[in-house]
Image (cartoon, rainbow, N blue to C red; front, side, top):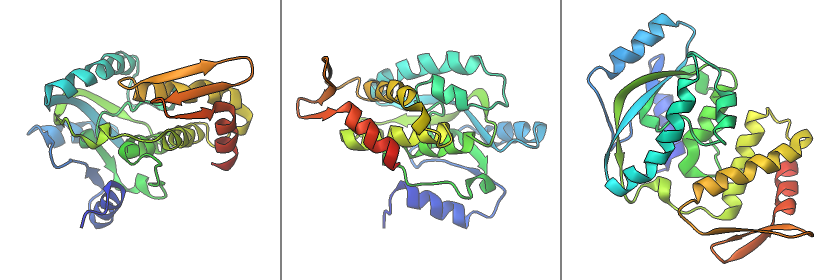
Length: 239
């Protein structure tokens, strides 16, 4: 029975008997030296608990082309970091987009998942939801080698549509985590950041932003119109 990504991962974590966990999704693969390269870093930095690597895309060409802009932004951001490093600010600078390409490039210590919240409002962004929580307390290390083969699929679950409510709530969750819950005092910053990920996430869709003197609204796919200030007020108070 398919219980969904979050429950499947939690089951795997529960059954794991080793100190380290390496994720590998069913349609991806890793190079023969994947674990060797990871444990070189783990031995060099004994306190390190989160290691990830570059990936090599393969599969659907259209999907690979769509993802190329993501990597064009990601690589320069990572080049500025001296790893191991705290990457909380990098997540913020990257406008809450995931700086870790896929589950399949991650190896981490099992114990850092204790107490982590798996209840992401966006199921397809579960990895981002987990990583920002971990980043608050643990350094990351990026290996600049393509040790993971990441399949690009035209029907990837990542491309599935999410409604406006879920997206806003999710990014409210992310902002709250990165600001360690201090979101009421930073409502203006919250407004500034929150709309940016939506525009990135739906860049292939039609989104119109309407501004007038009385209120700010967003029209999504020509369907529902939401009052942005009311949404911020609701989410910030009720997260």
